[in-house]
Image 1 (cartoon, helix red, strand yellow):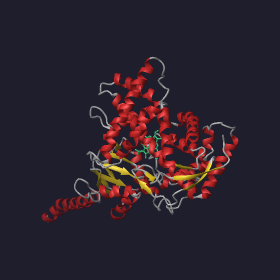
Image 2 (image 1 turned 90 degrees about the vertical axis):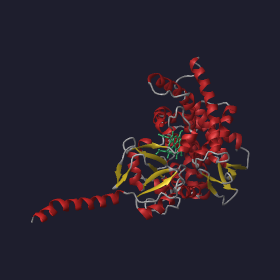
Image 3 (image 1 turned 90 degrees about the horizontal axis):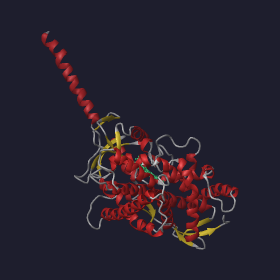
Image 4 (image 1 turned 135 degrees about the vertical axis):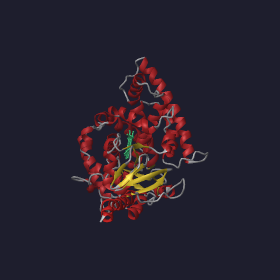
Amino acid sequence: MDTLLLVSSIVLPIITIFFLHHFLSQKSTIPGNYGWPLIGESIDYFKKLRSGTNEKFVMQRRKLFGDVFKTSILGEKMAFLCGPEGNKFLFSNENKLVEVWWPSSVESIIKKSNNKSVTAESAKVRQLLPPFLRAHAVKNYISDMDSELRQHLADYWTGRDEVEVCPFVAKYTFALAVKLLLGVHDATELEKLATPFVEAAGGIIAVPINIPGTRFNRGVKASNRIREVIMGIIAQRRKDLADGTATPMQDLLSHMIVEVDKRNQDSGNAPTTDGDMSSDLLGLLIGGYDTINTTVVFIMMTLVDHPDVYQGVLKEQMDIAREKSPGQLLDWDDLRKMKYSWNVACEVLRMCPPTVGAFRVAKTDFTYAGFKIPKGWKLHYLPHYTQKNHEFFPNPEKFDPSRFEGAGPAPYTFVPFGGGARMCPGNEYARAEILVFMYNIITRYNWVRLIPDEKVVIDPLPRPVHGLPIKLIPHETIS
Ligand code: HEM
């Protein structure tokens, strides 16, 4: 009897606890593979990235392991939380369970002084942006965006039969960003920034091997050259602020200098140097440059490949143009009328998201869907996974702007700008620039491809390999 009592009161609970623990720990071990020592599964990740099928990296593993899996890429142990639930979890737990994290390639290109990390500093930079990137600020940029583009078209396209779209778009978006955010109008100064810029941006999404000849090494060297140019611009602006020829709120550069100087005085921490500020501005330009270029170039490719969509956008934009007097620039109200054009742009952003998504780091141990994610683990979301998935977008290979009519896609499935507290702060700026571009091009031209089946490469963002040469067919021109 005693033995029976002993078994039922002590041994049985121990056995139960053992099995429960065994069962729970089985569940809490995230399935997946780390791949090879050091490189992990990076080769497969980059192979799919370069072939424009990064969603397959996630899809293949999700099929094998389920909605949560582990891998090792970019030298880090990483967990993927798949689907809209995963996106929602990451977006709504910013600064609670997770925080933003950037790979070491980003840390090297956007270098900080005193071993400060870009990841740790980025929240401070973000605080400075709203006065210049939120909708109320973007409203004031629209006429500048429009007049700058009209000038570029007059300089490079008017009177020509054949043009290359990619270099034209790149020139325009870069000149505009540098002018609006840094107040740089001087062509020589602009050229000094533009030339190394492409290489610096290319180093961001690269295997971080810093030996001569690698893409990463070229990116690091180019970013050093740009930083020097921006430091010169900062020094000049300090003088202009001191002698009253510049004002504290005239653009992001002035605002940043004034706020950072104030912060440096108030805080006992390592000061933010002019080098740090130039890195921040470089990061901002990188974030806002290729992303818009890619979108605009793919809109032009899509419109030429889908004549019905071209006609829809043409009608909408011509209706707006007819309401304007000759030479009158676009304004915020005009942009609000461009609903179909924006649906077209969104469908391009769905099928061809310009960024690889973003990364987070676990601030603490936490449990997601029954799996334990240890503190320090990195997490990664790819817009491609939900956006090119038939579960959320039926017939995902079909270009169909009507997906964005009415309530539009289900929450957390269309995430080209991310979401939550860390959502891209440049989304309104991007929307305005894309719509201004669509208006100006389509009210002036129709076009045909000069290389009908031009291949698209991902290098590191998607682009047509020959720069999208087109034949321009001008129609009724607006002034
Ligand atoms: C089509 C254009 C664009 C796309 C698709 C895009 C997409 C993104 C994405 C996915 C992120 C990461 C969000 C996250 O961490 O979850 C991001 C961050 C960021 N973007 Fe954009 N972006 C675009 C244009 C711009 C523009 C025009 C600017 C500035 C003028 C900009 C500035 C930034 C900055 C500063 C961050 C980092 C924000 C932070 O760490 O809090 N982006 N963007």
